[in-house]
Amino acid sequence: MKDIFSYVRKKYFSWQNGKEQEVLKENKKVISEKRMLFSLPEELYEIVNSESCSYTMYERLIDRWMEQIISTHPEEEPDLLKKTFYGFAQLIAVRMYRKYCVGKQASLSKEKLQAMAIAYETRFEILTWGKDPLLSKKETGEYEFLHNSLLEYFLAQEAYQNLELLEEFSFVDMPYGKKFLQEIILRRDMVRVNGGRFLEKNQKDQIIIDPFYIDKYPLQVKKYRAYCKAKQLEMPPQPSWGWEEDAPVIHIKWQEAVDFCTWFGARTGLDIRLPREVEWEFAARTGNYSRNFLYAGGNDIDEVAWYNKNSDRKTQVVGSKKPNGLGLYDMSGNVWEWCMDIFTHSANNTSEHTSTNRSIRGGSWLNHSSSCKLGIRGFGVSDNKSSIIGFRLFASAHHYDMNLSD
Image (cartoon, rainbow, N blue to C red):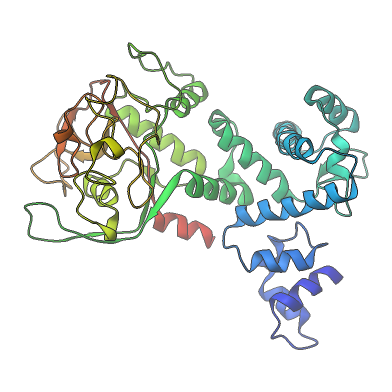
């Protein structure tokens, strides 16, 4: 408790002597989530005051722990130690999780850890070094992570890097892991777009847009491949030029794009869907900071988009052109992107009537520059698979903010 009180004195400096228990009781949830390195109260205090993201806070805390290990073991190669540490820790977390799912014991024997370390060309003892090691020895002789939050931190890392594991891991049942995974996705893969007002071309009334997140890139082949592997689905037909793992996935029906969103949202706890047309255009025009460019990111199409004159007549790796002001790539060109809406005369469409035509935006590698302009609308037949249509993920900011306060 001494270290906890040291942390509390710094974090809640307005308290008076004799009030420790009241402070602990009132802030039990916050403090319990920061148990990981109470042996380093100075570092903990500094980090929690500069980080609002739990994942980033843990990342920095583990980095501090790693720095201590390196300083006390100068015989070890620092870069190699760091390189093997994270991968090995993630591997251990996966094995412990699988064991827990079978027998409710998230721990492994020394012999098992040693065998895993040999295969990984490292030593499991790395994780047992330090005053408060990441792995602690139980009375049974087996090893477990010092705190469940550490196990879930490394599981979130592994699932982010290997999306097919989302089908296996139940993050909705992990209080720490779910938050970590959501923060990784939203911070690394998506951009937050502040809400505002949007006036569609040739329309009189402004549209109120709520805050949201949207993917930096159209969904890549490698992510859709992981989804197909997880769900035991066949990949879409390969284009004539072959699959490029970091290019946008194509040959996806509208419903297949919706199905991916539904699966990804269910497995991560995020409110994932396709963007509506007005949300897509609001983001493409940099939200409230629109500068009325012709294309997403500027007026020179060769700087910002892949289209018929520079694409070599195929999709290209995402993010290889200049982004728009929000940091969104390929909003003009490369592939058209499915939107939620049924295609009608207006982009602000909430119609429920049935139609086989769904809105698409952005233009593609096959199109003339005029089709890649921000105001241009298009449609695709929802049951068709096209080599020029992909999609991009949208997430509700409101839903995520609610999750943070759970």
